[in-house]
Length: 128
Image (cartoon, rainbow, N blue to C red; front, top):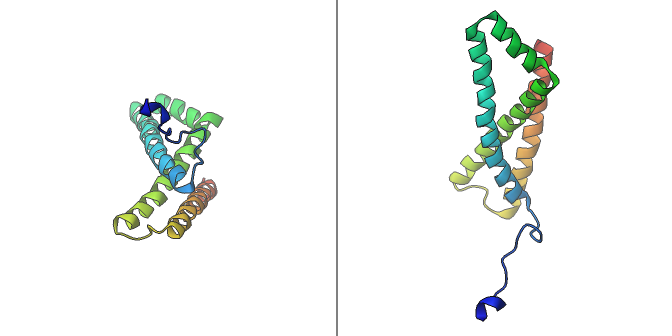
């Protein structure tokens, strides 16, 4: 009978996500996205090695709206995972565990991700 009176642990319907937990979940998701996105890179390289017809097909897909959207998402995942990975390196060294520092570094990751993504795409468009 005592098991019925025990409080339930918080669940997603009543738990308020925090910046730190959201960034942690995003770090894992971007790692998965990078792994899947690498398959797209392998497809492109294999098409380049297979000859001009295969490469033209790969280039056509990569130039389509879906291909550009996937490339953009992959670049966001890359820069987010990079910035948050650097943040984790500081944590591994014992820095930034206090809550204000954790939030400051979290927002720095978000801003850094946006800045690096925009810079990469703007520079990429200028070069092309």
